[in-house]
Image (cartoon, rainbow, N blue to C red; front, side):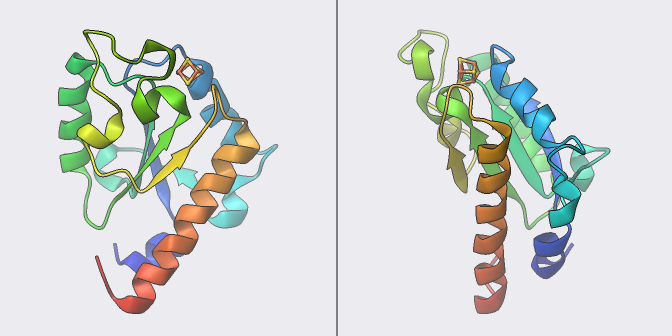
Length: 144
Ligand code: SF4
């Protein structure tokens, strides 16, 4: 899909790399009609191969890191990554654990971080909309 189309119709895929499910519940809440993400064209993709934006939640366990990278590689380009919550940023409360990588950025290129433990659905939507604005700028300069 062209980068311009992603700006107006981004399809999300969501991967939990070891979250406590707190962030996942908030991501799912953000996708409900109550928060109406479709007003921004945002909807869940039926398959990773149709995804434009990968939403990562949770601490990046070494086992999940392999799968996260594989999923990222299966997405068509251009593609973007949103890291949701403190764990996806740097491990959060589990930081420095022997079984973890130091955040999603060690495995995939992260475009936007959404802070919180967990962030509220409004914050998640706000972060995705910020990414869409970034995508719009990228499409104007013709990069990616
Ligand atoms: S950031 Fe907080 S809510 Fe989210 S997965 Fe980590 S511990 Fe759970």
